[in-house]
Length: 248
Image (tube, rainbow, N blue to C red; front, side, top):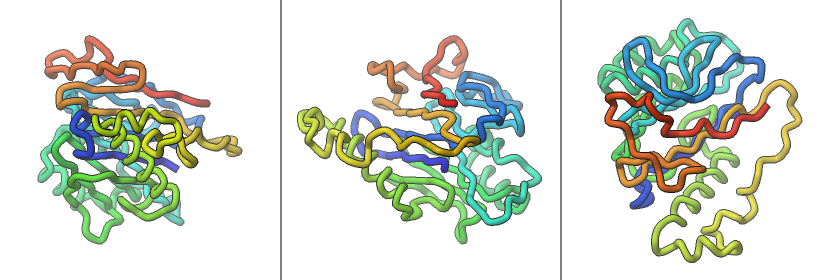
């Protein structure tokens, strides 16, 4: 099950935080997250699906983030267009252009959820939503293989934990967050390492964590100072976000 948690405007130091995993077949060929140029000429930091093309999560030089998840359905019918192109389109087209394209081509994709996020706001579209194309405002959100904010137990736990951890970085809560017995520390039941998987063929392929720090920096584990966002002129000169932990 793919999971995405994101928080908008929940911390003055981190206006946008995104945490995600990708649950995928191990045999599916994949390139690790790195800077590369899309067919439209946009530089993105993203992994790459080497089978169908595209990606599942991407960041551009402005710090905008886009991600897609599949909608779990009874019929494994393959769409005529790969969903992997959607995060790339989301970072290169205006909302109006993108929404028009998705409404026109919705039946050519298998079920999907798409989010596009910035430090100020977000936008969500699903071709399985009765009212596709929704603005996302301040708050903590969870997305998996059904619609945004579906009250699945795993998503509810994820949103609660993400909200507590992100809130713990507020200056007034830092001391409380440092206490192991404090709920703000994130060290209570339900936020520890995931249970061992017993499935042989699929599993978590990557765990990227992205945080926009004071509007001009990207934060990731291993670099607590944060990397300054590129101006967009030559973002490939240095890596600004690690690919996260890969398992196999």
